[in-house]
Length: 159
Image (cartoon, rainbow, N blue to C red; front, side, top):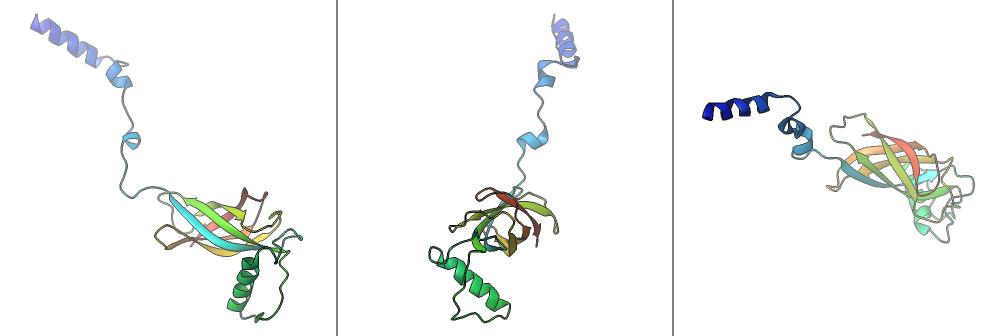
């Protein structure tokens, strides 16, 4: 009797398509490798070259201040000048860097107006650093902006 039970159990386990075989899991579905996850990145930048759809100085003084700081870093003295910002917009930049991304990998970024710009379409994002929660710079985004305010995509490249 015991031999018959043993043979029946062995036969059931040996059959393909049994319940035991159907409940198999892939290792990647049940294992998390420590510190292997996508990283959320965030940055601040300027989109230039807008056709009059950028921020208005009166409503967004930080756009003018950012523009002055950028120009001064490039050696252009604009202190004391009244800058018009209708062709410039201050933006927030977000991205998700996938795990195992290598130096030079391209990632998609989202560029969103934080001032009162009505459109970012056709503008160019000036090179902007993207930081993770640890404060380190992991990527630099720059390039032409495509789309509408709030859901605009551009291509960035890793630092």
